[in-house]
View (cartoon, rainbow, N blue to C red):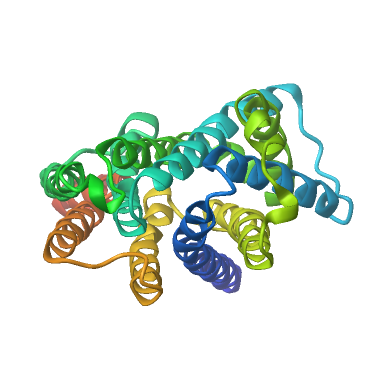
Length: 329
């Protein structure tokens, strides 16, 4: 009994650390959207250059951090899997998001990211054999209608710096990250956060270099104001290094769908900051789209997991077992 209680307390402690890490990470992500938009609005730094700053800066910080961390050897198979995970969780995710953000508004981008829980639930059904119930289907349709409303409205608002291409790139970013959460949980659990991230960001940096090199070299660094440097520092140190250090902590103890639920925080933080700074407005259409997406995500996440359904089925079987059968056993 004491052993069980001790294990329960350890599990609860891990879950608490996981939730605390994700709350912090997604608050940082939420603030990152308007901060990154401010850097792009300056005009001296392109989306590709800002993306490379994130990759290269985080790579340097994670490799420095690994010098002070416990040794965590990676075999060849896991190294290859980390490369594939890097393509979805970092390269495609961040490049498509930052380019999409340069073509759309901070609120549009942040609201679209809340589709991640829906996408993750669907992908979990494929990778982890989670059941697809009527609640999940209903939630997907509601959430999709919210995203569609946002995208179609953006297509009619080019004069406000919004385009359907930018919104669709944000959707692609969301989809890539959902694949990362659903498909690579076992890989992330096997290694420390520093080990996983130092290799993933190194792979992303190398692979992005052909596309980003020209943009990085053409930036006029001498003419760049100090406040832009500070915003870039936030993007690299806080929204990349620290946030991506915290997300694997949540991945180790929580289900992929629970991890993705913390996308709720992003549009709330991003919208408030963007409106306060005068970078965007929050009209009825964005409000309606946000409510539809939130409602869709809520309905999906209220559906039962595979483990819950199997536990209920086992419990029903036990209750319905005939009395004489239990006596024989």
